[in-house]
Amino acid sequence: MVSRGTTQQSSAPFNRRIVLDIIRRQGGASRKDIQDQVGLSPQTIANITQDLEDLDLIVSRRTKGEKVRGQPPIAFELNPDGGDAIGISLELNRISVARVNLVGQMRDRSDVSVDLRDPKTALEAMIEHVSQLRDKGGKSKRIWGVGVAMPGPFDAPDLSFKGPTVFEQWRDLEIFNRLEEAVGLPVFYNVDSVAGAVGESLFGDARDANRFFYLYMGVGLGGALMIDRLAYQGANGNATEIGHMPVKLGGRLCSCGNNGCLETYLSLHALSEFLNEADGVLTPDEIVRRLDAGDTRIQDWCQSVAPYFRQAVCTIENMLDPEVIVLGGPAPRQLWEALVNHARPWLHSVRSGGGERGEDNRVVLSAQGGSSALLGAAFLPIYEKLTPRIDFLTQGPVDDGETARQKRQKRLGIA
Image (tube, rainbow, N blue to C red):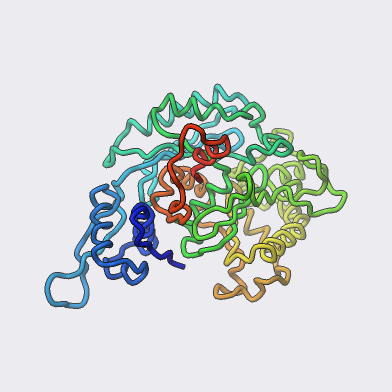
């Protein structure tokens, strides 16, 4: 589905987003291509593309192909050097930091082991690595900001910062204000599953899907519903917290206080408990090593949790009717493959038959692997420049009287 442009004077930023999004999704587009899709006048499109070139967001080139009278048409592409952003992914005892350009290429990346139980230690590590990537420069001197992906949910007293995560001391998230002050760049944060879904929407298997569900397995289990390349947030920004969906009556006690929640069975923490790991949660690399060595206990775990996984897929499909469910997160691809093998055939649902994608493609594995959340985090500062949002048309200036929820939405990048 392609959004239509509008001729209202106040909608110029929205129209720029529409045009920029078409260029991004197609990899390149001429003014005629854009006009055919958005219904704006040739002069309006010419003005918009000129504005985007002036902002260094796109570059133009003469197309080659069939001979035409006069000059060949001009095609526009995203400018890889139109600005970078820095992404941070927080996973248990590791921080990953990357500098990413406008077309999703990682210019640089660093991974460091950090005890995230101590916010001060984590802050020092984030400042150090962000500063290093910021100061390295490169072709693009512009940095749009810093995006952070971390386990959620936020602002949910019965669920936030509980359980197997190590973020108990991060409750007010004041750490991000201090990070912003230290590095001199705007900082945005969001739940890792949402950031991962953004990465998939922009650069992954779901970049052509208007409505898909992203299932993120890390220490816990999260999800995100993407609608027209925007994450559905819910009333308070905590929608699709699928890890806390009960799947077994009277089942295992969950950190949220309920019994039988999905992530108590399907998560890297649940796998590590099944294997009686005394050293905490297994790392993705260790899981791959054991699978390659033929560790049958991991296969036993996959078989034991397959019914809950199958049930979750059926529930997602019947409740949300997504075009596809994408499996990703820190959980290694080999583990997802084993889970899928044990869970198939899928239960009957409204997606039975698989629609246009086919039965075999109701559920797909992310090609980005554990990098989706990092890519998505990097794009939080510039996501609105790439993604059209119709609510912008009715959004007036925000004054000092904005509510706490509005302020939080701005920091989440959803205001």
